[in-house]
Image (cartoon, rainbow, N blue to C red):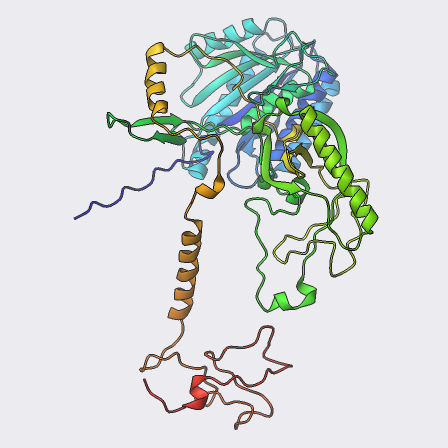
Length: 563
């Protein structure tokens, strides 16, 4: 007897996100510009969080402003559904710089604010546990511009060792805001990893953990106050903090020794997938439904009606700049790639078609020879091309998602990369933009592996076949078999619901008098045919109005026939 197959391993996603309480210290040299940068970063973060589908990545948040008094602008509570209150709290935070600050004579006000945050979490912890099913932890973040930030971190460390209740405290981050990367210095991407790092003119890293104190709970962090540095740090809250389970297994074929070689990995997102946002996903794709979008159900009858044909607008892409292909990281390219070729629309003049084809091939040749790609974006200033004519020119896919023309006031602007090929076509791909990027430490180099480990892995690789090219036609995923099984299961369920007679035939629908439905030539109502369930109907037919001609079935010819 074969043993039952063990269940597939699973893990909880975004179930261990901590509750975060942010303490903003307005002690000089905390300036109005720094306050504006912090507020803008928080505003951008929660705009993303409150528009994302799936589990909330920042489930609980609290905000304190520290000045001549400690003011709790946003008590620790749920983020989802509280976007208006968060906006009000950020407005009060901006006003606090002007109205709420006087030099605080108390030296322990920062420590007292940390204690207040921990006490507030302790009161809310039972509610949070009932909501998530997990024991949530607290993360306290203190943002300050004081020069003695390291002294403040040491004071908090001493208080933790002494009296603070740190049972469910994940960590305390003392964030020293500095002006190391002034505005105007662009962020660049490492071609190998796609991770953001500061430009050549910056002497400070965007975020650096200077020290972790003895308790392991208090961290001292230096953070640039420019917009990109703050946003990069805050977007780190969107990463999955759970470490209860591993995320991925990579299993290699067994070698000659028969021993299994397997790697266990974690997964980090490089950027937020636009398909997870409650926006028009078509702005980040070209006529292709994004993953996770609901495709409209189109019946066979509706496909015959001209009014049911859905059209998609013809977008206009505006060229921004040229990019070296060697400087493009694969981690910032997403979505389904599409192939571009010169149009063959028969409604255009012949000379215009030929001229367009020559220009297209010339552009492809030059980009290929110079190893360049074209960065483009949707042109929201130009209306889409005229697609009002019927019959050709516009690709009309009845299963496409209808979209509206982009508007500069309400729509986001998708960006794309056009890459050349050795032939006469080009490739266009969606590319990530600043608002979606997440922080990553993939560019940090670790220690070199041991020589024994390198030899062991090399031995595993030597047993694998090496091919010069990847041919997708040689790979089979079993997709057709899976789809076929799904369709067969659906049809079996529908058949099982139909009533059957003792002889096993599907019973026709009966009228009010309990007799089998008659045709329009029988004794039914005037001109009305009471159609049975087993009689197929032409596409587009309805119960009223037009009646199709009688369809003769086996039972029409032999009404008394028994199996």
